[in-house]
Image 1 (cartoon, rainbow, N blue to C red):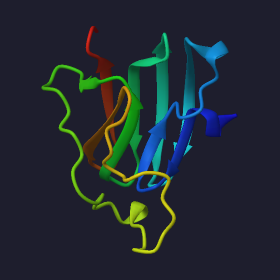
Image 2 (spheres, helix red, strand yellow; image 1 turned 30 degrees about the vertical axis):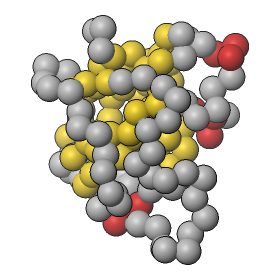
Image 3 (cartoon, rainbow, N blue to C red; image 1 turned 90 degrees about the horizontal axis):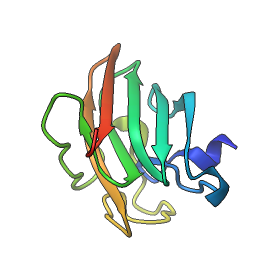
Image 4 (cartoon, rainbow, N blue to C red; image 1 turned 90 degrees about the vertical axis):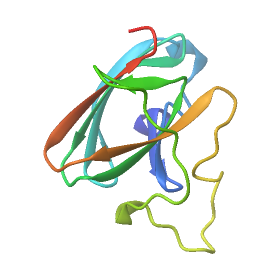
Length: 128
């Protein structure tokens, strides 16, 4: 079930990639992702309203998510560009990819969140 809510492949963390329609609103706590990240997510009407990212090892956390988020108390996140520099997400040139890592598609956004070891980051929906 956790793979329906979080996938860490294709050079990024894909949030709510296969959320069933019956789970239009919900929350989950403590999902672990490649790169030493722990995530808590809240969503309404299929869009994330709150995301907490705990970074154990630091590095760029590339996020693909439905809708748009911003850092709590700060400017909007910057859209991702190029290859994710985080070594946990390096893909060989001949690797199978379901999409380009920085592809912005159909209501989904892709962001790079620079993180430091041991820090927690709170991201909120645009209306929060």
